Amino acid sequence: MAQRAGRLGVGIVGAGNVGPILGAALAGAGHAIVGISAISAASRERAEAILPGAPILDVDVLVERSELVILAVPDAELAPLVAGLAARGAWQPGQLVLHTAARYGIGVLTPALAAGAIPLAVHPAMTFTGTSLDLAKLAGTWFAVTAPSPVLPIGQALVVEMGGEPLIIAEADRAAYAEAVDTAVSFSTAIVDQAVALLAGIGVEAPGPVLAPLVRSAVERALAKAGGADAADPTLFGGQAFGGSAFGDQADFDGTGGAFGGHGNGFYLNNDPEDPA
Image 1 (cartoon, rainbow, N blue to C red):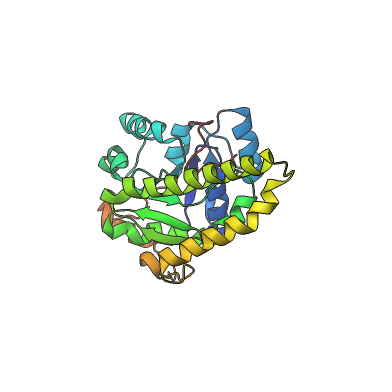
Image 2 (cartoon, one colour):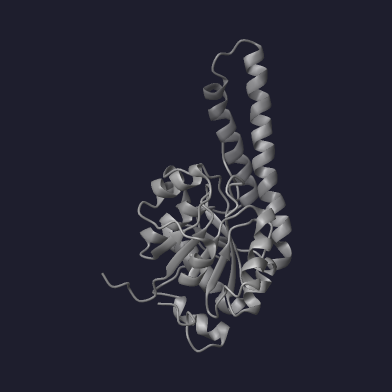
């Protein structure tokens, strides 16, 4: 079957808890999965479960064949990976390069940008289990999007296609955003653990179900008080609706005259540390 106009060949670097899920969401929107890189047996099993039939490819081959490369690797591995691929001449003009790390904007993708690639920083603000259950959770999840202004609609459109809501975060604000997200997850987990331990200490056999309604209502009340608006409103925080395809606008940014440079890649808040690439 011929690929629809505006659809991308997607390569995923990293088969941890995040990459395969985002790949499956984009596949559901009609994009083609070129392949995925996976090192460990667990990551290969996960890739097969979430993206059945997707080829397991070497990173360099994956980047060579892909119009959109998703870098879903641990934060510490991201900069060396991008720089190493640049040193080997892997990045191509007009190619979309998207990373999923909360703390980084597009600066970490500078070596790819220097080669003519188009940088996107897109972080889903949710926890991941690495199972198909995550696909349903993507619906309505906010994604932090950082990109150069001319191609920001591309990042936003990809988020919408994955079922999420785009939240525009400036390059200078990524560190603060990452701290906010990490604080919300870490502190809420620690507080629940402490409350569970206290109830268990007085003989409550199943503290979880006892605390669940209380915790949910407390969190919902705190969020409602902080938000002051309907959190389900897709226009909040700069989100917007998208019609048609935004992908044809890449030529305005890369200056090559072609959209893709001739191409015919527990829970985890960001990326799974188990599988660096």
